[in-house]
Amino acid sequence: MVQNRKSSKEDVKVFSTINGKIASKYYISHMTLRMFDQRLNKLVNLKEENMFEQCFNVLCWVHEWMEIPVRHNEDKVSKSMNAFVKLKFAEKTTDFLDPRVKTNLVLQYYLNRQEMPMPDFVTDCRTILDSSIRILQAMIDYCALVLCDIDLVLSVINVGQCIKQACWFSSSVLDMFFDSKTILKASQKTPTLFELKEYSKAALEKFCENNNIDVKAVKHGLDQIPYFSVKASKTNTSFSSRNKEKAADFAAVKVSMGIKISDANKKLGSAYTPRFGKFQFEGYFIIISERNTGKIVKLVRVTDIQELNKTLSINFKHDGYSEFWVDVVSDCYLGMKKRVLLKL
Image (cartoon, rainbow, N blue to C red; front, side, top):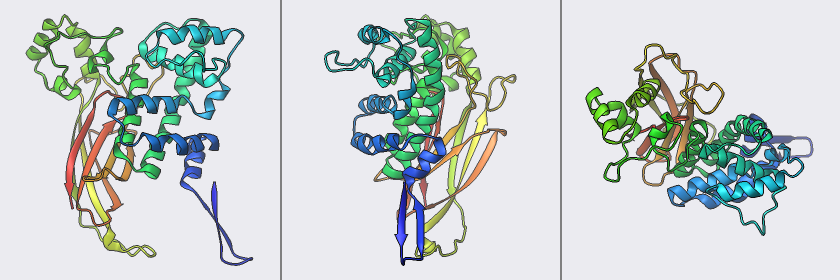
């Protein structure tokens, strides 16, 4: 994945493409990037839930899953699993010997928290989960750098959150704290994660009592999840001219995150992912997008959280726009997102 620029027979310059850089960074096949080219751009402007389902399907169709083994008679097992999942395959036209079909069904069983039909599928699920996070990171980079679409990036991040929490797009944030689906009273609106974090002790106990929910389990889970606030402001930074680009086309902003932890025993930066089965660090995405168009101009990952107050200086090209959304999104907690308006 390179571009050749030849000015003479002796002078040949080779430049890597964005797709090539993504494939190299995340150790994924060029065939996966080709599939991204063919399928991800068709998802722009879909409704939120449909976009989530299609992003999930794209994740399950990457070339990397061709290495997942389909053992003797496992196609019959996969066919029987198809009857119990949300996103079903058409039996007459589906090749259940395809490892990508098996991957899709295994991941759906995992998100449904259903017991795998046989021990080998448990082993395969562990392999799939380990690789899925890396592939999702590549999808996020592709959607941000190639398609530049904020809604699509947020949807792919949501797929990653659901995989780490073993939940679906439609799941309540309370499902992160229980093994089975949480059902609230019909008249009860499901609170957001930040609303739950802001409840007083008495209000939380009353909410749980009214909905027959174990308050201890909810409080334990909420104590493991950090609360954060976000501020974004323009800074006065001078830029030198960059080739043909004017220095005036660039802006510098300061994004500050204030993190609060309820449990004094919680290790800063360790993620609460009880069903993922493998230790994870908490991470955040800072996404700057044009307010009117939703075009992403900058995406920054924040990892290795070692302090409660973190400030980042971010430079980006603004192309004459003066108003931007700054979204800070958790990579592992459902519904944990803060959005602030930035005016240059």
